[in-house]
Length: 600
Image (cartoon, rainbow, N blue to C red):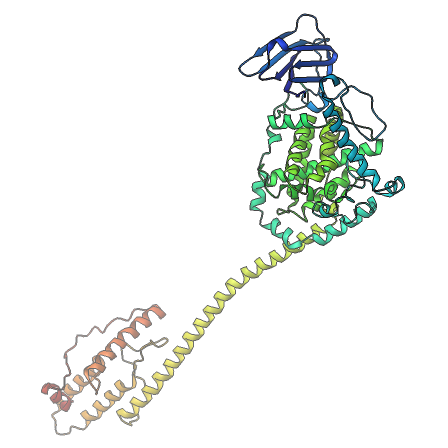
């Protein structure tokens, strides 16, 4: 059995360089064949046959080296036309294709008939038996008339009857209930209805106004944004494939596709749809695939999820935009625009970059149990087909996508009206919050003022009642209700918190006058002196009849009242300029105080 070795191709202006890894071989067993675009290499047990994109010659200038430690065979072969650029040297599957005639069938597998001597008969029988089983299963279940009535889907709309054999699995892969009996128009109508019912305005508005995570995703730079321009191909980027990707390309079976104009057009549009879903998935996961990656890619692609066929690039963009706002975790229109820009960059980087993206998708689906069906229907064929298309076709598609525009109104989800209503509600809430703050302050101030007024009024009423009571207790003369105008601490504004009774002082003064008048036997000079002393004592002293404790409270109240008068009216009350002629301290045990009271 022959083994296809790992190989890589590069070029300079004059030479084609082939690097072939053939470990554990003998240098004496190398065999080469060079003829135009055909190249063959044989070193037991390795065999490699390539169909090159340009012509090479064997003119004696070729040079070969072999690194025994690495098992690497390197060959430099001159180009027939020096300076010619060979396009598509990274398209390994296309290079492995045999130059055979094309069949009339839509999908044709090119089987190698050369080197049949080196392939055992048992292997040929195994291959034929496998191919026969596939064909037998497809045609024995349904007649040709039944197959013609089935709807087409898959790459280039070339498949049918696949889901009829996979009833248990297809429901986990696609959303379409009956793919075999649903026309393209019915699929689109069902898709639009499902998207309308799945759209959540709350989820959309939450991502719109709380967009911290969205901003982080928009700042991410995917791997295709870091590519540098290719030195070999103008307008394309230098893309390198990993060893796993190269092995994956070698395992792909070469097929030829005969597509009519409509099918080719739909194939290009579906390719854009798949790349858009892939671009979103890479950005939403910061370039690290996870267990949700297969679901995200197939859910966002109408091609993969609904077997949709598009008629214009605008339809592709609208479908993708609607699905981004309906299904994934992050539902923001900015992510839709970012995915469109990313897909444009992928196409501008050339078909090698597109192929690398398709290989990544193929790997993601291959590692997921139900999604592998989508590789058979779409991705594998795309990996083979993209290697054979012309680069100018990819560049033209990139230019068309770059000029395309997508606005929120195109999605027909009433996003502008929804955002406007949400903005108005938010503004009203902010205005209500700003108004409620000063109103509450005014209300609290009013409440404090009212409470102060009510307390002041209650204190005034208590003062009046107390004054009247003490006035009545001091004696019922005609002077009991009058105001003592000569008192230096007479208040002129609102009363202090401590009520100061004024009536008892005047009552005491009137009583003293009556006592002085009631002394007829006293001499005239003594009467005058006693009267003068009584007036001064009435002016300077306030004596409580109960105890010294009441005297101290009366003095504190007087000081507080004086301070209140000063702060409220802005006037300073000066003390009396006259010195106190007599200081009297009242104690019940002091007999002098008792004598003085009797004297007065």
